Image 1: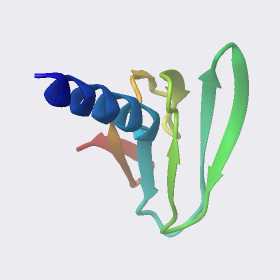
Image 2: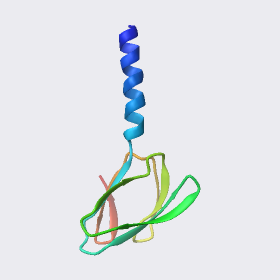
Image 3: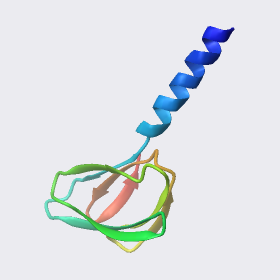
Length: 87
């Protein structure tokens, strides 16, 4: 029982830090996301074909087409024709 409890705690501790949202720009031109995380707002530029992991603790994102989304940090997003598609 103790080994199971220790294994579960170790898994939870290591897995929690690795969670992050992922965004891929499938367009042929750069795209910009506005990310608000922890009260700090920043622009994140994605080159054509680039994939970036971000938002590990939850955040708000303004997509290239102006849509606003709240993320938990586990989403996989693809930008195609300037629009975000969640997978």
